[in-house]
Image (cartoon, rainbow, N blue to C red; front, side, top):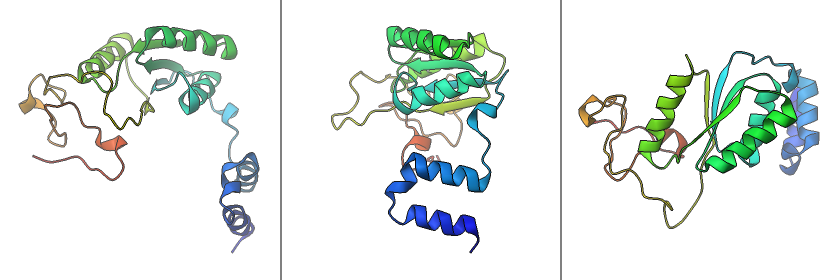
Length: 182
């Protein structure tokens, strides 16, 4: 076992140290990680949901510092506008916009996609960080539409996408699930 392997094993042993600044710094130095501020994301479009707080906000701030063009997405336009203003002030990046959309409502997801396509010539990164664990289900009604693919009818949907009249499914964000086939 090399020096990195030994250090990694020692950091992992109590588990807690893996999630501290100490664990990060040791791994960064031993593995030669590139500092985040050294990445140049100029000209890259990143759409990030759930970026108004927590990890989503931290990620959006770092991407903005690296020069990315950002589209902030959350359910509330006012919250989005405040986040855009804060990120612009903190990072000096004037290429941050927002779209209000509830990821639990497929019609709003479709509107988000249409807005991104209308405003930009491409999408480099999509980070779907939005989510809430509510044992009583969604707090807003889901779309009654069964449209779930790039086309306007269920028959035009991608064969790897599951159409659900109760609302869209999100196989990539549901642990252990896989796209259903017809």
